[in-house]
Image (cartoon, rainbow over all chains, first blue to last red):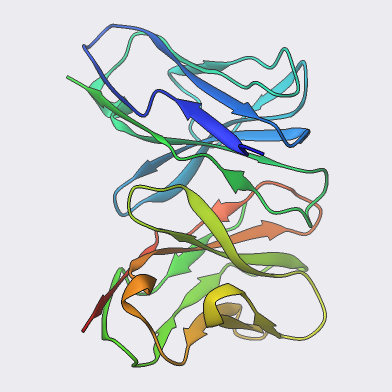
Length: 113
Length: 113
């Protein structure tokens, strides 16, 4: 089991560029999440999904989009990158229900210059 | 949504000394509580969780936490730390029935020899 994998590990973007952060899980989890982590701010939820074809906004969705065409994959799209999107991005997944812990990927460190 | 406050942003501690990390959350009828650890350049992993029952919860690597409903707190403790416990620790809370987590800002623990 690889768990939750994320690519790329690092990326530098110029202002206005676009990119997709990939996330894949092999645990057959229905729930998947995208967070951003900024120093001293903890983790903020960007988007989440409760199953294939179903996504919803979290706390900080502006400037991002997601899709969930399969149970395994949950890509995060950045359109028109801005310096405020410089952050570390984590993808996570969990089984159904509040009792299930969230499993996190290793993260993607993104810098927008 | 829950508000989670981790009262210490940095905790330096000597090896084999005890450590306590404090976490308070906004009041709710029922909550589920979690502590996650993030080692340098890695994703988050679950240390322990409180769902119901005994207010003293034991986790991995010798950590334990105590749920105090009247004080809306969930403090994490370890009686004797090791160099390998150097990491960032996050308290997280979900309202009963909600699978989404609210995270605190994190506490960085630095263990020195």
